[in-house]
Amino acid sequence: MRILFYLLSIVAANVVTAAFAPLQFSVFIVPMGTLLIGATFIFRDLVQNKYGRAKTYGFIVTALILSAAVSFTLGDTLLIVAASALSFIVAESADTEIYSRLKLPMSWRVFYSGIVGGFLDSVIFVVIGLSPFGANILPWEAVPAAIVGQIIVKTIVQMIGAFILNQVYVRLEKKTVVS
Image (cartoon, rainbow, N blue to C red; front, side, top):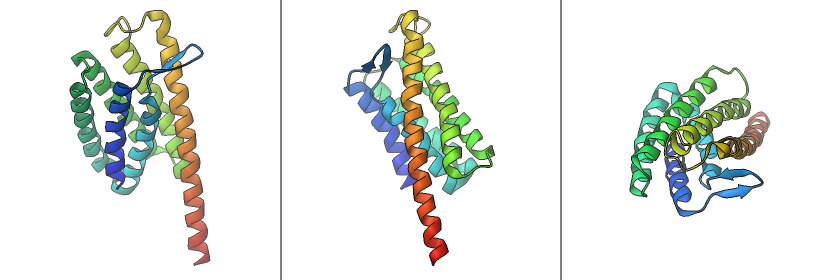
């Protein structure tokens, strides 16, 4: 189920991004799929927690291929697909490596690794995919707001996910102690 949720969250993020206009709050512009991108890091951490780091890289590659295929099928240009693929592989790899190395409770590993992954994903995708350097969808003046907006949303999703995971694991530990 973890793998399925991981892969479905990636597909859903692509579909939602293509189907809905970006969310704008204040100066920040956030593609709607960003709400799900933070969740992909959490699901990837859950996959890694169960299957280990080495097997997780296989799932990341599968997710990368699936994401690129869905993105292209939904009409994204090759440049957007390539920017998405690059930001995905860098962010997911960073998340995986940080999650593996932190010696903290799971919820904190999910939070910290997701923050770094979300930061890298936001910066790489916006600069390569959306800025004048890439597809020229956003002017340079809008690039910082687009990056910061995505980082804010991904961080909030990571915080919520880490909190939920903490609550689940605390309850599981209490049940184990009582039993």
